Image (cartoon, rainbow, N blue to C red; front, side, top):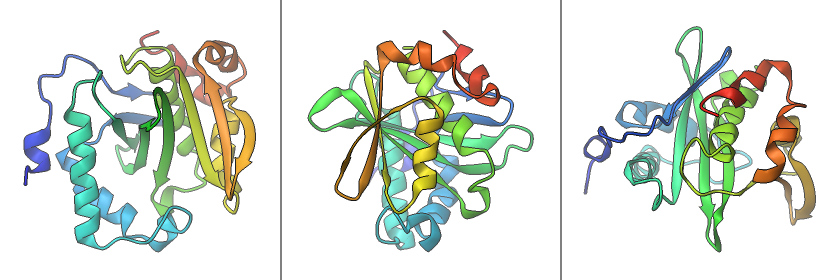
Length: 204
């Protein structure tokens, strides 16, 4: 099996990173195996996502993320960003963007934070950096629509997309749904909290 280390795309000319006052982001790479283990084997993190994984299952998920990140933007099915605390460089979690299986121009967002970083003001700027990079076309992924899902039993997750101006859509089963269309996002940025508005200006 190909190792995550060999999947790293060292010569990718695109800068997939972002930096702001509270959070920074870069693509997940071979340095982040322990973070994936901590996230996916944590019952607290996985409570509203799915079954808690074994270390081996978390490693397999990590390898898949590195594989997606190594693919060219036009053919990439997903991208995964490490989110770190700007002032300390501490790893806090990941934000993902996965193409919708029926619509390649639609991206499905996901956020996972370590238990000690939940409800500490890091999720919103981390998600803002990804949303801005995707919808401002800084990253050539060809995404025109972003959707965010959250378990209705975990309303805090929905507050992230709500805070960035996503529109609430009808629930799908036990999932709340939020949507942002590319043409709408510049107007939404004007209403972003001051603490995350800086992320919208990078590379635009």
